[in-house]
Image 1 (cartoon, rainbow, N blue to C red):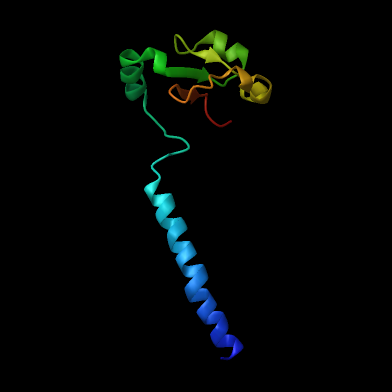
Image 2 (tube, rainbow, N blue to C red; image 1 turned 30 degrees about the vertical axis):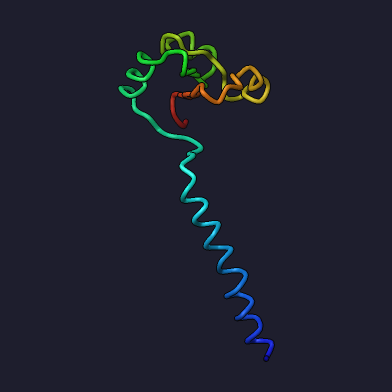
Length: 103
């Protein structure tokens, strides 16, 4: 068997099944790292299960004091690493982050 044929055989028997398996595994997993929701969805979900959501305003404290979603907590983006340990560790609590947009 030539070296070229050996490489093709190796590719077909080892790499291709591995790629197919990892692709199938990724597709079967329905876990999304994040989801964008609209205001109405947030209102509905928060009214239905307020203890299952933590709404986090990532703006600076001055903007938060000026106006914010009632019940939201302020965790400025620039200080996130410092205070991330305060976030709930329970996987049942959904974290909803909002900001004033990209500047």
